Image (cartoon, rainbow, N blue to C red; front, side):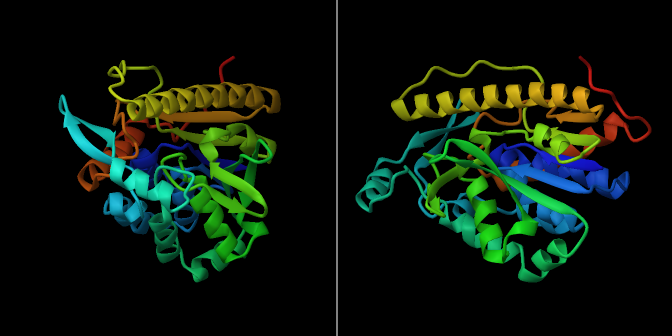
Length: 302
């Protein structure tokens, strides 16, 4: 069984889209299992449908308003880089309205239902491929993997949306009596789960460089410190997921191909810039093409 696993990474999902375009359209790879976390969960359904151009159009046309119904920060240029600062007025308004988070991402929920139709859902559910998204159950302190085979259309769209909710900057969702958030808080790269479900070969797209290439700028505000802290935590979770995935692959005699970003794309993956994302898609495609791994399976190193 072949599996495609896409990590979380916000706007950097455009890079993953470019990689998968080459794998699916040029190398004609067929996958039985598609697993995504956060931005990866937005990609997997259309990739399973082989609708690469459709999801490319979406990823290269969204902006902040496409995602946030209440964006908690403003974007500023500092030393040539996009940096985010708190929007005090919007955050205060959100708290007054009773929200538990700085911002809300209800526009993303609407966008998911606009781009992923009931007909597409039924085609996947009745087909041979399995599509799974990762969510974090904060109430039970567990990671949960939601398969398209187990839910109706509305519920599955909810799980895709929940998988992307990077709290406290996006919506905290209460569903089935529990509070849920971004799957990346528990499983940034669900390689282990893919192998446990029977995958003998995994193509894993990691929306991060293989080694750290930068030092973060000193925090200038509590909000900036919070974003730096969460980025650090997610990097550590990703590292552990990859390490555990390698051990699981060795134990089950599976193989993994890793696709890391070759360069640092951004330090602020909550910034959705159409021009940048279009360029990252092309970088992903060119990078996958340059690897030329279609003629060999790479065993996992100890």
